[in-house]
Amino acid sequence: MTTRAVMTIDRRRRANDGLSATESRLAVITALATSYLVAWAWLVVRPLGAADADVAVGTPDRAHHASAVAPRSPAVCCDQLPPADRPALTIPEGFRLATREATTEPLVALEPRRAPARRPMRIRTRSS
Amino acid sequence: MTSFRAMDTDVILRAPGRGAIEVAALVRGAALAFEDAERRFSRFDPTSELASFNRARSSVRVTRPFFDALVDARAYVELTGGLFDPCIGSTLAALGYDRSFGTGLDVASRPHRPADVASFSDVVLDPETVTVTRPEGVTIDLGGMVKGRTVDRVARTLAAPAAIVAGGDGSVLGDGVEGEGYLLDIEDPRDPARVLLSLRISDRAFATSSPNRRRWRVGREERHHLVDPRTVLSSASDLAQVTVLAQSAERADVFAKTLYLLGERGAAAFVARHRDLAAVLVRMDGTTRLLGEMEVVDA
Image (tube, rainbow over all chains, first blue to last red; front, side, top):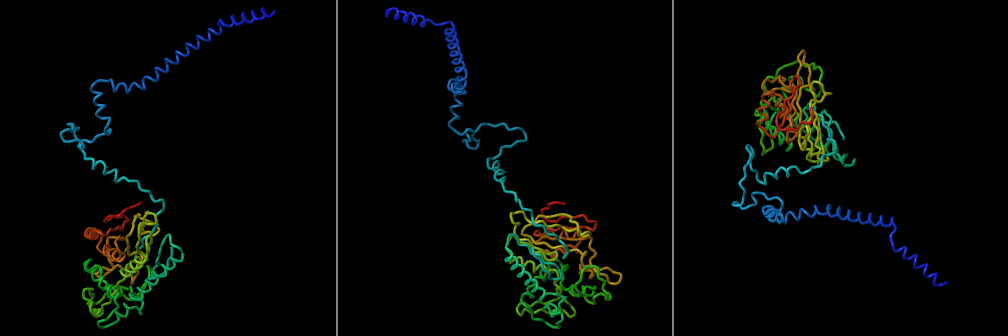
């Protein structure tokens, strides 16, 4: 009696070890979805890192420019450069080079000032 | 705003932001200053120092404020080339302006021309003895100059922002309460209810001269108080009104009359020579001409 019972249990476990059709389909779908997500993740993340890679592995000129400008301020005024290093500038007719002082002067004059909200006192003239 | 009556006109004092007690004290001080000026300089009060001086037949020792006013008057006589002349008082009386009155009164006195018209240059001022000697028959009238002088005296006792106006002569202190300035409405001399234009002013004095308020009739002739010393008659200026902006109400008053007598062309030349002045000329047809620097707010 006891032996029969054990044999019955073993038979059931062996049957469970094999995958059913539904389980197989689920496994395939899961595998495909995972590979799909991995591929998308690789495609999206790659361009963000690509810019840095371009600077490092780009053309020799671009690489040189990037290494020359990056440590300094993004804009350099001509008069900050030594005279020998100043580039030759071609200015359109009718334009002229302005000094930095002349450029900043109007900005100083345009300091915001609070407009008086009060109405002025009115005085009427009349002949004395 | 508080007003009181002095020098036959309304005196208005404005001191925004001050308490009632402080304003009342300021008005009392202003009224005392005007009373003092009238006691000293009124041509119509027989008890005034000026009236006593005009009655005297010899050299007169005068008070220091009276003497100082005459010294300043002499400077104005020279500055205006004699168009401002305190000796015009006797001429005014001869023309019928021998009492204090407004427009429209019919003066019964017979018109006559003054026999001799002396100039203020003939008056001798001795600063050492504080005495004044004038030619016989000449009377002195400082008129509007004293009104402007008193406005300036009161203005010196006020702190900004404040305004004091006495019948057309006024002074504003500071730039208003919050930097908004003061608006000076230029009255239309042909219709006092209308405003021709408005100026934004600050720390400035002003005065207006026009014959529209003090006119009278002598027989069939109409006269006004702006007498031209060159003709010894009421001026036949081509202007209807002049408003002057200056650093003091006294200067503004003297030069408003001067510009009126000079007429449009002469007034433009005069303001060009005195850069501290600005003026609004109103022509007979109501059109205006602006001389000197000023800020017109609306027209």
